[in-house]
Amino acid sequence: MRKVTRKILSRHALNLLERRTSLVSNSVDRVKKCHDLWGQRRNKAFFEIRQKLESTCSGRVRCMYCEDSEATDIEHFRPKSIYTEYAFDWANYLLACSNCNSNYKRSLFPVDGLGVPLLINPMEDDPMHHLDLSLTTGKFVAATPKGLKSIEVFRLDRQVLETGRRDAWAIFCALAVRYSELGRGVDRESVAAIVSAIKNQSFSCVSMYARNYYKLGGLSNVAPPEVYAAVENNPKIFDISCGL
Ligand SMILES: [Zn+2]
Image 1 (spheres, rainbow, N blue to C red):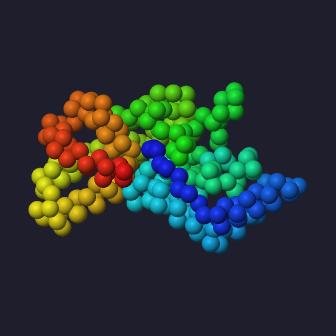
Image 2: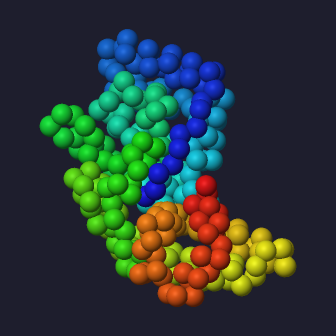
Image 3: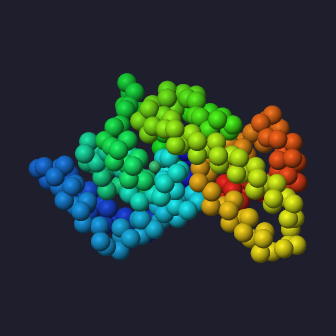
């Protein structure tokens, strides 16, 4: 999981969401009203909402939770079955894969004694503050109670995800060396192909953590010498891989 930045929604789309929030709050059965209105998304406002969420996802529109699969579902961070007042709130929308949305998170939403969410919201929190990542094993280790609950609820310790993150680091290393070997502008087509591969990798968080290690001076402890040298020659690779 990595931090992503919410885009600004048009006035037209916000108006539709506000109208629906008002319809829900004025109805007797709010959950049913939410459900009915949620079924009505074939309109310009929801087209924009989906398009803005998709363009916020990393790589090839990867899920904001697992970063592995394609993000297909508009996800309510606060479940609409519990928090009907946030069912039509732009600030409550993320884009997730159907596996994370329907099989893992579902309507789980742990909070602490003050009602503060115990799940990482990638649009509001920086996952790096709550989760440490071992680049060589692909495993997340909780750094805070929020990190711990997030691993549990999103099942960020799924074997396929840990293997995927570990492999993403190996691929990043290979691409960094290749990118450095090609240099700039010598063979534009090959450089463009490498840049595209770097940019489109799944598990973008791996690059974010590697970049952070690099900034803090710890990357040489985990990266092979030729990879570290390649990154030092072209630190711009982090801007490409992190989509910055
Ligand atoms: Zn997912």
